[in-house]
Length: 554
Ligand code: AMP
View 1 (spheres, helix red, strand yellow):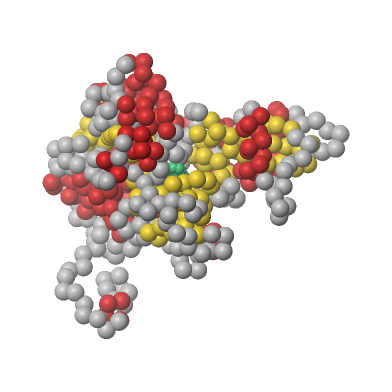
View 2 (cartoon, rainbow, N blue to C red):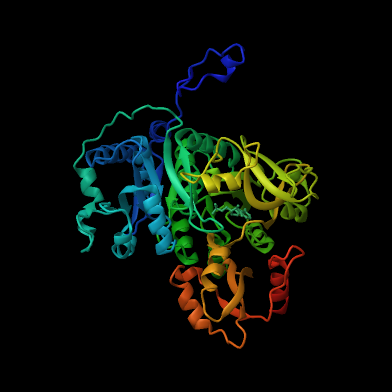
């Protein structure tokens, strides 16, 4: 039997079993390794309190040990879900390691979700404890009554910054740590134990949870360490702007200590000017985030007439980087690399760093290639299929829905058999909802999206949910929500509505209705009235035609 209690498949087939140890892959080991081998390497964080804080990996390990003991003293048991509502910062890193290190599950909550979604996920996850950055205290004060009863709240600051709050029994993070002595023997358990939980938007209905394991997280970190060698190496400094509350900051809190790279955590201020200043001050070599963030940084770079000190590498994902953005970075000596992935993939699947012979092509052709999403990381397999599920050739021409499998890919949604049944094919591959081609070099090119979702500034809006809410408006007979390209946000929602006979649709009353279910940033930029919606041959609303009509007439 393997340590996981599963029959060893090698033995089951009557083959000769290897004679090697089988030690579980544990998340805590990553930080222990970072502290041991790269102990002086630092995490520098812009704190919600406003100042800059620096700690080494060795110091971070000591604090994480204390946090682990504090969690146990608070009654957190293996398997319990501990939620966070926090920016990228060192305390959030400590929580990533301490919560999963004691065998409980770190549930990162996206503060950009609507109240209804936060209510759903905190109950679905059955969170026991909630760690909150100072910035989000007012949000929690407003929403605590819709969260699971008895949820205890810890505010992530020192006693001197503890706010006056209506949150009953709110605890102080630094006080919890101060009460503990250093030193903790990290328990060892089955590597398939759940470690962390992240919800992603569904095309309809409620968010769906991806429940990662120690094994998937450590393998994903090792896989990324190999794939992003231009960013992650001893002596490098990496700044994840991509949030720790969504897609695990692309795994950077794990890959950095593993590779000896320093981390710079930007905290709450993500505008171009703040990022430029922080990067300049800390000498960020590689910065990671969605295109919207880089538009802001590029503006400051242009105004300053230079890139921040030491800036050489930018990784873009979450949405496609436009060609002009790639050129603007490359022209200034900053190499841009696309990465593609999903919450359901831990999240990285591909990366587009060019290697020979592609890196020897003329400049223009290299830029063309950089607009694509790149080649698969080790351990990730990809196939594209037609409507009948037939695998299509990787010739750069055939287009189909992209399916993936690998150790970093979910095999099911957390406690959600319906979503699981809808998203996997009969061979167990996961359907990404992205439409793509793959060329002979294995280069992935995302061309469209099969899922009915809009991505604005890296965050999702469900068009179907918005349509069904809008249909409750007494003057709307039919409607469709489509993505309109937007220079800053990538996409923005537009509501196209057909009025009831003899009625005029009042935009403000529609937005008011939508605001009961959607966060402010999710509301459509405009409500356009049309006489009828274009239909496909099968009688469905043709969003493609609608998009073409409305974007060409705009
Ligand atoms: P999320 O789970 O929120 O990270 O969203 C994953 C989805 O974002 C993918 O299925 C794609 O639709 C989109 N996406 C992620 N990375 C890229 C990229 N580099 N280019 C285009 N779309 C992307």
